[in-house]
Length: 76
Image 1 (spheres, rainbow, N blue to C red):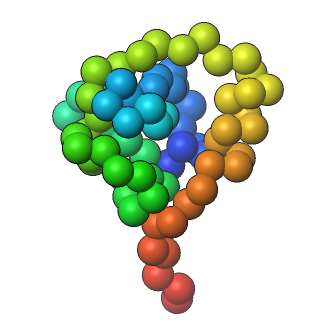
Image 2 (cartoon, rainbow, N blue to C red):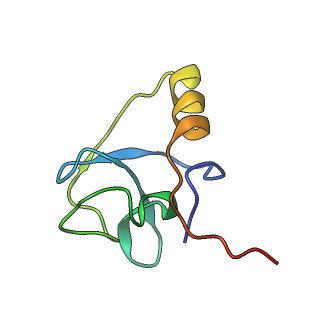
């Protein structure tokens, strides 16, 4: 899955839940891996219709840095 922190493409909002999402070339609109357990979206892991945003660079950088990450990482 794709992380919002490292994703370098255009970020949209999901019209179903209002959370950030992106266009996955293989499956279409998708949510980010950080959202796996932290949001309720009827379409997860896919996203609903997309709302295109004109992000200010500082706002987008802040969103990426501070978005809650509840993904279960395995420690080695």
